[in-house]
Image (cartoon, rainbow, N blue to C red):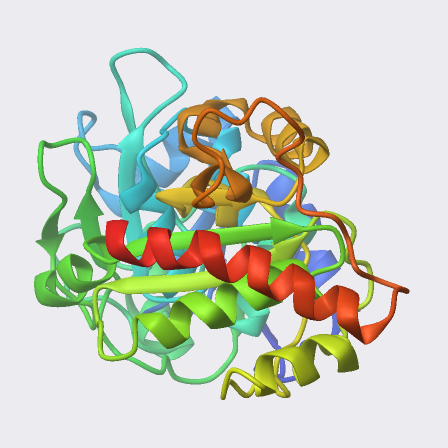
Length: 354
């Protein structure tokens, strides 16, 4: 019996078609689908019968594991306990994209490969499946990967339940695989991402500043440090807010105060704090004790990397008083300038340390 083929628009995937294909997965079926690298075969990772059938269809040895796909970066923590900042630096830079990371599994002593594809059909399909998707390439073991639905069905027609035709794959080569279970992250299969790319990304120090709305204090800190580190290619500086719900620019008072330092922050757009930002940061500076508490409630494992910004002020040595940086929001312009001076004092010291 021939495999049913469903054509789906690669840029505007029809939800009803994707939903139909996802139901096939939940019932234990196998579905060929497109990604930006090559075509893959999807199966429910937690369905033993489906996985055994997938192994037989692929003609894969029993000892060789299958990687899985996720639809969001943060979902990596559902499958791995890794605290390695390098993992989060790389996936934040390369996901969605042609990258598979091998990390420790939640099952002690085991590892797991995880990827987030940069393809609208694949992402929607993985999301709608509502289960963990195993997704090897759509070919027999040892054969060249399929670059189109037609290529895949040359070998797999009649062996899988359904195939999604979403046009030709963009990169036409399998994803790069980076093994994070060794002492040094190693590219064990090179695709479009090379070992040099990996080394460059993971060796950059990440500094993160946090306030409430990411419109004044953390913006001042971010832009001041960036200004002091001009020419440095080994440090990334970012800021975020614990209560950002709608993205917005920096406050006009913040932009004005920074402009007096010769710094242009008019293009700044606020961003909400998320777990990936926290897990990839080497140094995290918060404005208040409440911000620190918020960070540790969200990701307790970053405790040793979180500091109150004012701890680095020149007058903080031996000081036992309040180390919070007051929020100038809603106050006169002079309050912003005082806040900027307080932050600048700490940033000057931090710039010498990073």
